Image 1 (tube, rainbow, N blue to C red):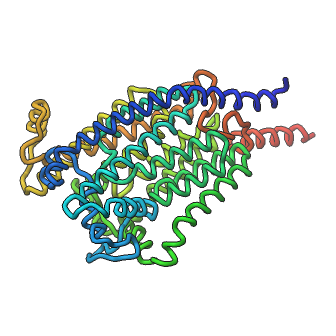
Image 2: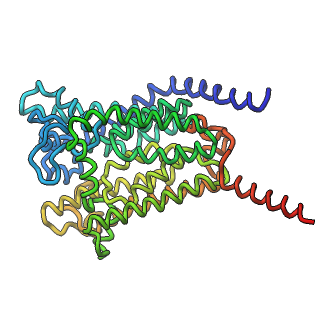
Image 3: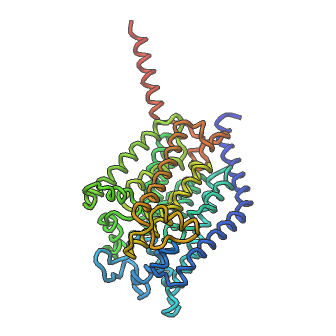
Length: 480
């Protein structure tokens, strides 16, 4: 058999193996994820039983946006997302991309028959059910894209503390699930479908737009021009199909997400929040803040682009997707607790090793409780506990009385920042030293790469340098 025939036969055989393995794993992964989602729902029960009173939600670390925004955004009054405005100053329409707002609106219509007293909790519980389904989709899609490590990848996502604690804070799992499906479709060598799913993910949340960069760079390096074109076309078509009707008939409502994102200042969780507390000047100037955040992100992304084209072996798709998302999040002016869900499937696919993953999850747990207990002290206008008092309360399995102080919150913030940065640094190291990559250690190339998996390099800085050296050598030899 020729080498080209071998390359064609190998993906087909591996696809069959993955399908057979997934058929056996679907019940296991579905059951485990459903159990974790149930535990996540139970974790929110103390707050639900108290009507999501703010003091209760911060004390018990069970806050969610879902219940209060049902009322604050006028959905309980029958207002239509994007088309109807509500009283406000900076925010007068639903401030989420169209597909997320559409999910909110759909659930509002579903619970409309409930009485006034029960509609809010019905809205929350129906949303939780849909988000749990999306969590299962995310786990199964991630497992499918992981190739031979399907069980390990699926369980790492399903059993993560991040999923249990953060699944129901907001509607992020819609974009996370669609992004995971897009990666799974790409791994199945269906670039047009992957593009359609990615476009829908962008219509639900902005961050999946960043994944176009790694896809384009890796397609260029492998010479997969047709696949790249089909993926980009699918992305554009599906995004326009969802957004265009709202853009045409509710322009002000559609624009709310973009103006709000541009105009908002430093929020909890951002590294700029820490730097401002340390005395860095000028961070209350939104224009300067936008310039610093966007500029830093662009510099980091430029470095990732060089890495994609200069690495000794073409990086795996999840590696670059994780890195570009970290490049966006680290200098962002907003880093909400549930954003950990964005990184979760990609972290598992990019680096399926437990030690650094567990350290990162510990950092996320520290931040999850830190943010709520800090908000408790802010809302109660108390100084909050110091580190000793906080550790003493945690050791007693209790919340710190009066919350935590700014210094303790900064420790929690940095714990998350440093562990994410460390995970990204390890992935960069494995891109530069492919022999240390756990996925490639057993002979695999890029299970999630689809048409990139096993493809030859066509464009790379290494090939360009080699060609230049050959040309110089030929020129020198020609000199008499």
